[in-house]
Image (cartoon, rainbow, N blue to C red):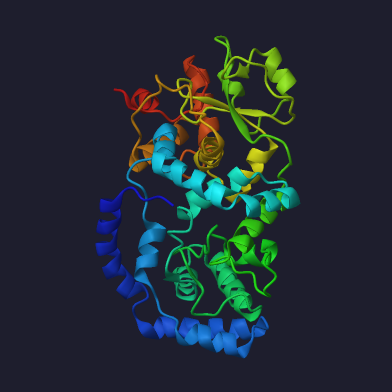
Length: 399
């Protein structure tokens, strides 16, 4: 979860505190909407007791809308993103916990094929090893988000699944607490994810991802296994690219075997041969001068958990650090500046105006924006790395 741009969030809160009262603070409107929602819950065959307990404590939470609408002031560069998350303290704590829970994690690894260090890395990044699971009332948070309307259907469904979790006996209404967006427990599962992938590993009759580490770890491993994790395969490695490398080839959707990449001169960062794997792509999360990574099928499983490339690479990097000393080697000459959210939005708008389709500007450099940048770079005769760099921004807006 993004924590930068605090001043932006505070100022947004002041504005939203006013607009929220006019938008939802008229209790009549919210109460009328809740009454209709309560009828929908009854039609969805949720128990009367759970419905009553859920709705009697319902309240509109303006702070949730602040977080939902808040945007980071700056888009972190990859290396900055990793540095803030894979810290010395987090590595040290993760190593100690990996040792402490070795027996449990080894058992889960045998059962699901997911390495113990990968589960530990998710735990560290999601909740700082359980120390920050969130303390929002999930029913109220999800009601607020569903009422606000930006993703009404999604959050309404998550609310109903929250009640189904209670009906199944996994928690009480009062115990359903988590992040402002509805994620909960040690591994930050959404209610629908718990219902689909949750595991009662300690066999006590409930899937307790809040306080039972066997349940939390097993549920996470089951999730990764079900979305395609492959036992004994890598997720990502840092690689060295040849001087004549065609950087337009570095795209998540451009897959080759490592044998084919080897023919193009790609090596492991230590100049050794690449491992024998299929379906490999090369990523440049900080452009030509940043580190290059080769990612595989298991990286796709991590991306299924969170669609951020920076997040997925951070999971792999933290996992590597938990079992050894494997720093990111390249990137000394990468551009250190970060574009602001508004600059990224302007860059996307400018590319659209020039005929390079970024889609609707959103301030984040997704795959479509990267493709548009490559198309623009090709017309300019510059390296097609697809990176929304400060130098590219200056080039686009130069007089």
